[in-house]
Every structure is written in C-alpha cells, then in structure tokens.
Length: 300
Image 1 (cartoon, rainbow, N blue to C red):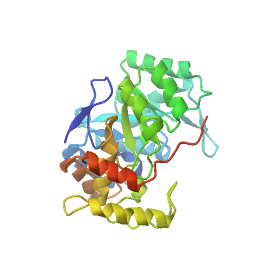
Image 2: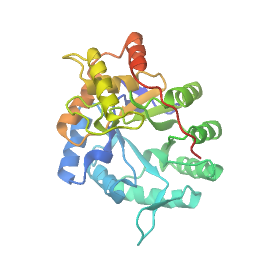
Image 3: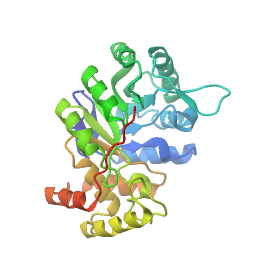
Image 4: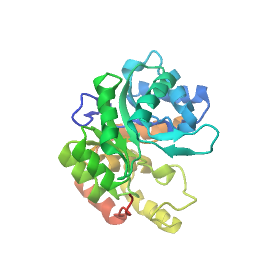
C-alpha cells in the first residue's frame, strides 16, 4: 500500500487507514478485523477515549499486542465523562489533557501514542493552553505528534496558525465536500495533512448497500440519483465504495482516508481501493459536477 508522510512529521501512514469506531464491542470480531487490516498494509488505527466509553481503546490495545511496531496509533481527547451523569462535557484544558492521556495509555496498553488529537474544539477554548498540553506531552515522549479532529474552519485556522500540529481529521467525501473551499487549500499551503473521515459517508456510498435515509445536504431521492450517476465511473475493477475512497484521496492535502468497517467484507472492499489507480483529473472534475459543493455553516 502506498504510504504518505503525515504533515512534516516522521510518521508514514498507509493511504487507507481504519476508523475503529465501527468495530463494535465484540473483542474476537474486532481483533480479527484489526489483524486482517494490518496484514493487508493498513497501519493507521484511529480510535478515541469517547468511543464506547473507552472500550474501543481497550479493544484496539488488546488487538495490537505484539504488533505495536506495525501501527501508527491515533486516539483523541477533550470529551470528559462525568461519573454519575449521562453524556460528557467538553474540556480542552491542559490539566484534563495531561490527566486523560494516562487513561488512554492504560487502555491502549502502550507507553506512547503516535498521534494524539483534540476531539473537537471551539473558538472560545483556551487554545494556547491546549497547545501547551500537547507540546508538553510531545516533549516528554508520551506522544509523537498531535493534531485536531474538527469541522470548524475558524478553529482549524487558529491551530494552523498557532501550533505545530501535523494533521486535521475532517469529514470529506463525494457527498460532503465542504472542506474543499475553506479547509483543504489552507492545510495544503501549511503542509498539514488531512485525515479524511467518512469517505463512504456512513454507507451512503457503499457498493453493496442501498441507502434508506438521507444524508446532510442530500434528500434520499437526490442521494439515490447521485449514486446512479456515479455508476458510470465504476467497473468490475472499481466499485462505488472504492470510487468514493479514491475521491477522498484525490486532493493533495489528504494523506489518508479512514473508512470504518464492521465486517470483513466491508474491510476488504475498502482496502482494495489501494490497489486501483488514482482518479484522473477528468474523473475528479466530473464527480464535482455531479455532486454538491456544500458550505460550512458558522460554528463557534
């Protein structure tokens, strides 16, 4: 599998990673999927302390025992669960980040994290304090690099200007092209890599699944019509899922796409996108004409 440098770091990631949120809670099944992914060239595993209340980190940690050197391990921080209460509270404070990383390390069964990501962010956050926390963890060798996972262009701009982050995780797919105007050009200019999440749009662009509900910016009938139009770009060698993943990878700012998988069939379908040629410029332009550009609404 082709590998790309993550920002200005020394981290090399296969162009297709694995978003672990959809693995489920069955340890045997999750382990089998992770092992198969690693054996087929995937090396970026993305999880979060938020997923399944930390269980996802535990499952990932168990699955990579004895294989840690094969993995670029990414997790996230910032959503703080409050004992005895439903849900979670947003906490990007330095104190919380320095505390939360210890719990993630314990659950993951490792003594370092390759990529530690802020799981959200608002413009009202104590951004300098948050950056200080990541820089301290990096200096101490607890993390190798850091980034943010955000949909807010104003927040992304602040971190791009004020921090040494190497990546931004952002939703980017044929049906969610909001990042193309407001985020991707900036990050390409700054040399900050994009980790494209949701390239198959939660199954809306999956090859063997007919969508039964709308997605943001697309009513169900519009989505079905778009899928029909995209079929002209598929073939026996390239499914709709693989076309969608290759589209997310077509922008030069994108280093890796991280589709999720809850079955072996989905995993193999996603990874096979690495074996097909990149989209031509003409194909990318045709897809853009067929789909909606989308715009980000103002988020603080």
